Amino acid sequence: MFTFDDYKKSADAIRKITGDIDIALVLGSGLGKIAEMLENPVKLRFEDVPNLPPSTVMGHAGEFVCGTLHGKRVLIQSGRFHYYEGNSFEQSAYAVRLFKLLGARTLILTNAAGGINRTFSAGTIMMITDHIKFFDESPLRGPNIGEFGPRFNDMSYVYSKRLRWLSKGTAARLGIPLKEGVYAFMPGPSFETPAEIRALGILGADAVGMSTVAEAITAAHAGLELLAFSCISNLAAGLLDQPLSHDEVMEAAKLVEKDLTALLDAVIKEI
Image 1 (cartoon, rainbow, N blue to C red):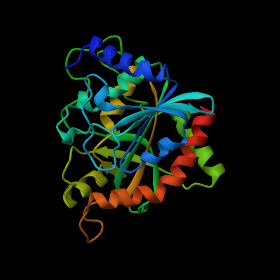
Image 2 (spheres, rainbow, N blue to C red):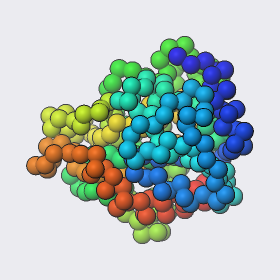
Image 3 (cartoon, rainbow, N blue to C red):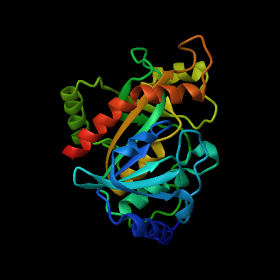
Image 4 (cartoon, rainbow, N blue to C red):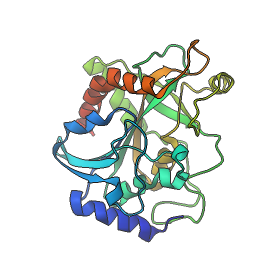
């Protein structure tokens, strides 16, 4: 378990390169090119930040990229620390608390996910309205660090209504199709079984993936305004008569990259 001093040491190492920030953005599998929209970017490898593990998954660059966009200082985390890589939930969400210490008020999360809602197809952009997590671990487990938030934090409004409203209007103005739905977390690295997907569908999930929720819980605890999007990479197990693969995730990211980049650019301008 980490202490406040651990987080401060890591944040100070980033600040030496980036300065303070306004908005943080975490990129999911295959979405690394979004970082190219920043002006005057500077980069910092995860390995150069104390307490951060390397990113080991294909499609994750494993670096922070910081630059200016529409007059705002934006820090992009290009790559993740997943639970299935051997990280704890606290390690998976470690960077979120660094964003808070660096001055960020807003966090935007993106991910690649399997579609449970049968109206979705590969390349659909889903804005997350809520999530489901039945996994027993929590990024807040252990001694509470009061500098970030209370021992028991409210989870009623994790995903900002204001930012969702802004995103819906922006997507409509740009002519970008945007769905909304509930994201379900599963620990991975195996894809879910058809029975698990049927169960999640009954419980109200529209998409399923192996990331995002630990970060969302940590952001809610720290008081960050949160917005999150899923790139639907494929229909989940059992919905089509074919096996699933990570290659599908990467291909679907290419389908959505242009629209998601345009949407994020426009939303950040309005925040």
